[in-house]
Amino acid sequence: MITYESIKENNTVNTYIKKADQSLAALGFTEHSFAHVCLVAETCGYILSTLGYSEHEVDLGKIAAYLHDIGNVVNRSEHSQSGAVMAFRILDNLDMPPEDIAEIVTAIGNHDEGTGTPVSPIAAALILADKSDVRRTRVRNQDPTSFDIHDRVNYSVTKSQLKINEEKTLIKLKLNVDPHYGSVMDYFEIFMERMLLCRKAAEFLGLQFKLIINEQQLI
Image (cartoon, one colour):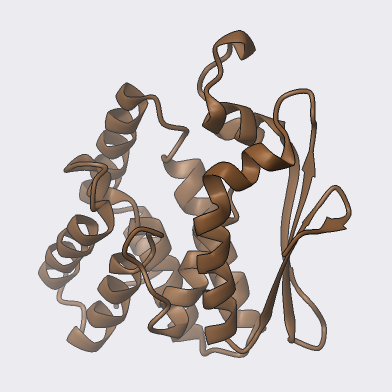
């Protein structure tokens, strides 16, 4: 059986993740390597398990999350679609059942805000997990004087937490933002489309999405 743990140990998969991140580093993007995909996988699993999905669905969600950015090895543009095709080939070669492959490639192909739509629980959970990964340690540039807006926004976030309430009616993204490096307006300038997609994803899962920055509710 193909599991999240076996995918994490797959040399082919890990090569694509490394090379994809190297391409994004050359383009000046924030970190998209193992720290990102592992965190997204754990968050995706947390969302699905908290909402009562089966262990198998949780594992499929974590696999989708681990693979979701491999398309960046082809090109940043439309990386969700190229990544879905790459994931199909990898998983098909590993003899994963078609039903499981379909769930994973659907989620990967729909995770990006440019073209994505929460069309399944796994796709919705992946969207929320991916878009909530905003943190200082994703910034590669160590010179604050040369930060672009993406560097400023990520560096300004000193704490990020995505939580579902006990009643399972709300999912909250709580951020602590240091205004010395980035403002709330900076955040919305580059992340508004992502937050709107998160709201759609939450609604697909039967949840209300709330964005709270420095204890102020903004969405």
